[in-house]
Length: 387
Image (cartoon, rainbow, N blue to C red; front, side, top):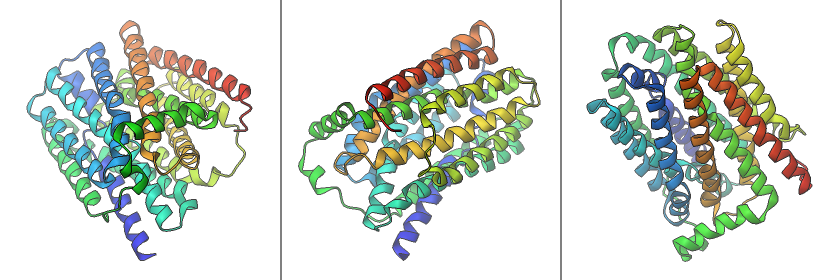
């Protein structure tokens, strides 16, 4: 019990530091202030996502083949280097290299962290707590976002150099939190198989099991269309909020996100109409784009809270339906498709913002969410999925 408590504390510490990144609420503004147009900013987000989805499934297979703790540390180091490029090369090329390295970090983390948590809880015979633990990790990460936003507000008027240095420090500290975790053994079954065999089996698991496919597809759309998160600050600037007020509103928005994560596990055993969740999500995004200036950030906060809660619930459902042998790989398949949808989302928002404005772009994105939601409802009916 004491060992499990220590592991949870280290995971919570990592979650906080991984999101206590002061540049988070400011980087889209930093790009704009360095002369990048909306299309260029959108292309940076595409580079981020393309890099991540190209590496996603291979990274998951690596995490099933090698110690997950070391895989996570490798990703953390790459992100710190990426922020270094932003610091010393503040132009389009430097930003692109930084995003590419961050994309690789995302691929190495996605699936790997969830699998690590699941393994530790299984070993401690406390598996029913998975949704609760991951929900708390997400909530603590959101608290990190909130505090980072408040700290960034103090530096917003002084430029971006100090903000980037503090961000690099937080990334390095998060690496120490992961390094302090116990050295968990690699699954014996996985270690005996080749890299490609593990990867193919993970993909087959998704394609052959309708329920797993539905869960992966749903999570992919939810996570991918979360591309809207990256444009919230630019949307608020378009509504004439100052940099300082933007980061304060960012803190409020992610506080609501933390609340959604914290409460998610309480809904795990409820019979909720989850197939309709995407339509609620699209409605909140569209309403925020049309709302008066003072109400828009509040609706965006509800949008983020709902996103966090749904993400936690569906991740828990998915983990309960896949095997230990290919856990990280199968989860990474979801991450792979999430990045594809993220690219679609970034392109939609970039196109809409270039043609009209960010409000119009959010409306286009909401329409895309509805379209994919209809597809999933029809798929669930065809395969008679009771979810």
